[in-house]
Amino acid sequence: MRGCHAAQIVACSRPLHLARGSRMSRPAQSPTVMIDGYNLGLEKGTGVATYARNLSYACRDLGLRTEILYGAPFGPGRSELLREISFFDPFKPKSALESALRTAGRLVPRPGGPKAFEVPVTGAVILGSQRSRLPHFDRIWNAPDVFETATTQFAVTNGFMNVRGLPRTDIMHWTYPLPLTLPGARNIYTLHDLVPLRLPYTTLDHKGRYLRLTQKLVQTADHIVTVSETSKRDIIELLGCPPEKITNTYQSAEIPQKYLDRSEEEVRADIEGAFGLPYKGYFLFFGAIEPKKNVGRLIEAYLGTQMDAPLVLLGNAAWKSHEELRLLNDSSQKYIEQVGTRTFTRERVRRLEYAPFSLLVSVIRGAKATVFPSLYEGFGLPILESMLLGTPVITSDIGATAEIAGDAALLVDPYDTGSIARALRAVHDDADLRADLAARGRARAEFFSLARYAERVQAMYERLV
Image (cartoon, rainbow, N blue to C red):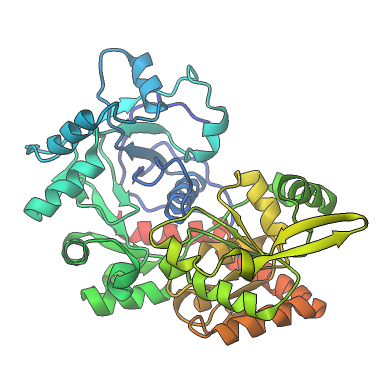
């Protein structure tokens, strides 16, 4: 990993030149891209965090200088060593009073905007498990509490906040709809989807504020980026974005080769040892348990099939998860299994809150199929990750999920439990169908490779610098 004490950046407006599928060595004068770390700072990974990391990898492969802007709640202080330590030290308020004071402080006007400072990454802090969460970077910057402060002040003033103290930058790529701008740079914003507007009953967002924010972004941004044709149409139709001002780059998924190369025996040992799951003998949903993921209908459809293959739900319980899981009780899903002279109580639907990345890959690879009957997605990363690992996919026949899956998945009506149940039975009973879906999925995943994604990002950036 590169440290942050790189030579001074010299901005350049020359277009990029990258041979298809190759990694570009950096020219003497290379355009600089700044990426926000808003979602990269989350302790648990999300699809948007994956997007930001993969964007940084694409910038690396394009030979671009890549800077990351975080908003951790600590100041520059006098010690560079303490600055580095503070960056990797998760902050939690020590008391309710401290939390209240911090919240109140976000209302204080910031003339000119908050000032960022460089965070040294010298190796003094042993990264270890933190390394996988970090993006590619040449330097890291921090503007204290900038994301929450900007969001709070937008709610009051409807105004955007500037960020000061950063080096000259060609492109500021905000990976989330944030009321922030970097003066002197081309400010582009990624809108992944419009779920708060399309499915308002599935989120806690303040809908009026969200609409004002996204409308203003469309009006003031140098460019808008999104991740599917479905989301692109929504942004054009609902927010009035001019078609020439928005680009769909899709998204990418990258799984380290060492995980792809693991043998079936190793994967089997992982899932049987950690969770007691039968290799290729269970259906898998992974993601947050929340209304738009449609887990409630999935459970209802699965229980109606009376299949012996368990359904595994891997993900944290989010808003209204209790409603999605309301069918799970002892009478509906527990059963007795006799193995030789031993008797076991089994659960037909098994909940797993969390799995580290290496084990998550094994859980996906070991599944009979991934089932992802979401009501609405901007992209649907579990579809792509499953296809990349050769796991058959069952997903919704509407919106971005159908778009990303193409002809490489079994599509269902997400509002019809009978449609979901029939797909589960078909995949459960037909080994040839599973093999065909796995092969089609691997081929489909090639379209979303990191190299193809970098080409799409390159073409967009070239039009802007």
